[in-house]
Length: 313
Image 1 (spheres, rainbow, N blue to C red):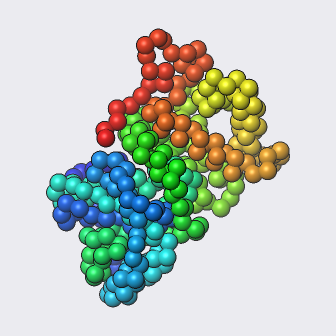
Image 2 (image 1 turned 90 degrees about the vertical axis):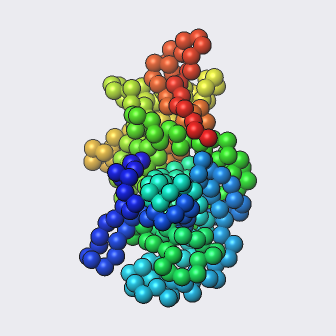
């Protein structure tokens, strides 16, 4: 989550026709989100709110007036799946460009937390509902992920969960080990690849990243740590989960090493995705990353059992 050297614009040229990145013009900017639908506005974290989109009529008129043919094509393709927006508040144009760039991680994190495809392609000076001219909008990136599936609708229980745990999840992205961001990125992007073997490899890179202490006897120790982390005091559930994880790990190994997938699982990709989703959410709920020794032997009295991070509200 770099500040890109403090520049007012992160710029990438494409065939000399258009540029991508985030801009800083003032103290408030918007990122339009493809792939996520919300019904109420609420604060995600300091300086960032998630807003619904109420009025879609004006956007099409504005899009068709854009003189840049590349921008116009992307806007038309993206329009139908833009169902929510982030508003980012800053203190000056420089910090606005930085904060808008880093807020793209909010889209990635939301996609990971709800196992859906979300991407922020468009930055704007005004909200989606109030855009009046194409010059107020800017294409941040040309990727079409987030348009393949219907938008995920945040339910009331999802909103409650976000209000309670989102700041903890976001804080973990800044952990010095970088493992949570690896897990989140794997969860948010595994669908970008069409081959199940590749999807399994990506998902398990995220799962294994969270258990960075486990370096030997991977199948046994990973399954043990995951079962303990997710099941807590429920020993019966822990034993069941241990067996499930070991079976999934065999599929992971076959996928990575090129062996034939002789799986007993109906859909190892889907089940591995659900496993990673549970781990990412559990980390957010505890505000911490799992540690092998504490899971196996317990934490010392008076200490945080997992090792938390500071959360800035």
